[in-house]
Image 1 (cartoon, rainbow, N blue to C red):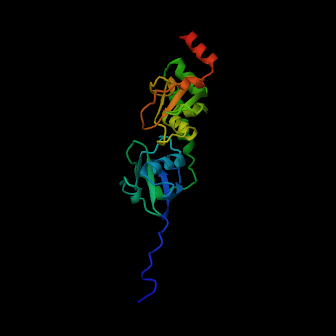
Image 2 (image 1 turned 180 degrees about the horizontal axis):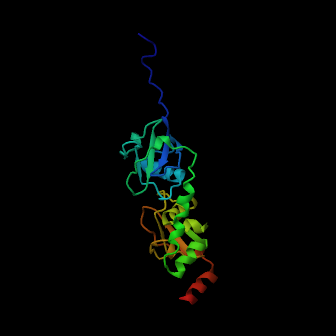
Image 3 (image 1 turned 90 degrees about the horizontal axis):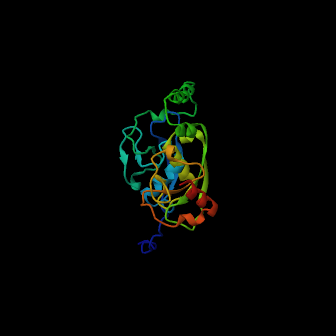
Length: 234
């Protein structure tokens, strides 16, 4: 009989997994490598939040993860296997591509695809929207539910303003919510914005994730001169 048979085995550290994640439908993104440590990433929501910051997709927050060939949805962190590849997506459906063949070399036709939005600039829109397209916008963003954190000043480039999901993704990088990605921008009264056209330069907003808007006295961070100016304009 072995002398070690009666010993209690030492607890093994949680396994570390390495995976590669692609952007859904993006034939020019070669994938981002992630190292999953169970001590730092114990839930599926924390995994989605980490992928959101890593892939920096135009659709904003990552809400779904798929297998790259068949498009099977991954719903549990335990189903994420070491050495495998996955596709990160927002609320949209899985887009079938040969993700394994994506390289860092971009075809020349990429330039023509980037020029296409210029055609839409000929559409008759409001003067306010035209101003947003051609000028950057600086906003001040509070963290939902935390009045102890000062608002973060964020300069949004004019190209980012054309896509609301990109705006939310940019705010996600600057404002760190406990619930993960930023899903909405609200006024200090709790009214959610519907898009970039409602952003006003120099204004204050609250970044909200999947949780409810918290009605708190955020205005105490705002200089008195700015509050009096808003009242005089109203």
